[in-house]
Image 1: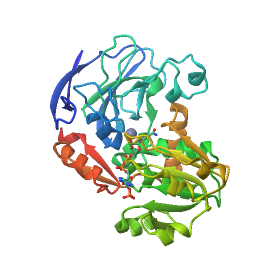
Image 2: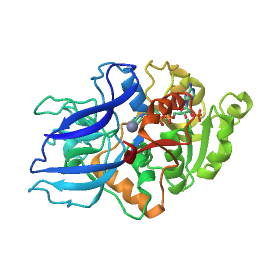
Image 3: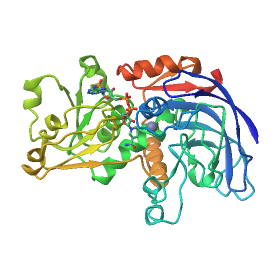
Image 4: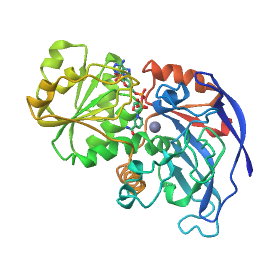
Length: 347
Ligand code: NAP
Ligand code: ZN
């Protein structure tokens, strides 16, 4: 076992505090990574506060990891000491079910192992995430990161990037499509950058008037404040697809009405309460309500390569790890531009 330093919540709603723990020895197929940066996802807040139920404590969150390989197992084929790597939301899956066979490990029928707040298949030991100085991961769940990009700004791609890239690809967003992005936070700002890079006309639907200039700078063509009834009326029956990243409960009916015939709203945000949808809002325009969960490992690598090619990175606010509790409070108030990233050198 190796001694590791990190930050953990000891119980639901407890502030995160320094926490020492052990990680497994590097096995034949494992890669050991010194963590340089870790992004802060709203899912970290949901799980630390046990808003989805079933959280495992103590919890070391963090699934937007970038770091350098320090050791590899003797059977590892694709990585060597010194390589720059990323780890996202998953560290294992069954590898044999039909989802895994289609490279869709996130929909593994046995259930993928989360980077944190999960349990290892063999030992049933809890997994601990990236708010720590080191991680050991099976090489099949390790991504390759380009050294041409700013590593701190790459970290959020491992969750916010792939979670928005995957539905844009699944629903085949192309030049000229009208894409709406609900909520300009960590996921939302990546959705804007990616959809714009794919040639779409991008509209941000936001509750924060002060984000308009940023939205345009990120690549959005239009910006609509959702409390503005006239502005909302002007976009009725307009969008091909809505990427909904909102983390809090809200009335979806208002937004469904902005989809044109055969338009789709993809739910990415996971508010604790279930939404209510009026059937007329779907049947009147053959609209669809869909969902999407992160992305498979192969698609995550494709996204990282796409971002390297298009010079796409997250807009971040770097924090020392002892500011993490304040960062959570700010994130819940939608006060983040647009992703907090922990500089692990401060641990
Ligand atoms: P975030 O940075 O906090 O962004 C969420 C944005 O939603 C806010 O910036 C805000 O944008 C908007 N919002 C917040 N409260 C709102 C309210 N009461 N009414 C309307 N809009 C509100 O969070 P994130 O990290 O992007 O994550 C977003 C959600 O996606 C979370 O629920 C997270 O758990 C989930 N998630 C899902 C997946 C997946 O695989 N499906 C992966 C990662 C995260 P404006 O200020 O522009 O209104
Ligand atoms: Zn996440």
